[in-house]
Amino acid sequence: MMGALAATALLGAFGATAADAQQQRNCGPRDVVVTRLAEGYGETRQSMGLGANNAVIEVFASEETGSWTITVTTPNGMTCLVASGQAFEELAEALPAKGNDA
Image: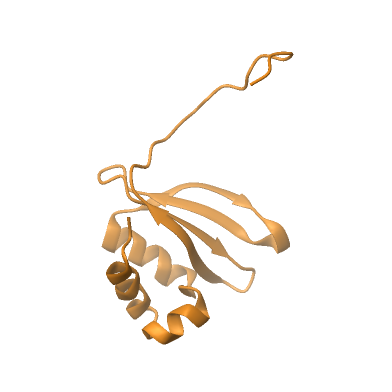
């Protein structure tokens, strides 16, 4: 899991201080965030979708280490880290048969 120290280091790439971090919600320009996730954690985009207000939700993960990060990018290009953790696993589960309570 991305610990406080790692999150602070990631924020350093955005030019933010620890006090700024809480106000900025761990945000930065998308290209900076994506580069830092790739270079610092070996994470690449695994999935994406469109959220409320045209925000792009993305899941980045490392197949080597199992670390993962969920980001939200607003239409203005700012990307915020919203969750991170360990033990990422890709799943492709089929939907349950119709009439079968899941």
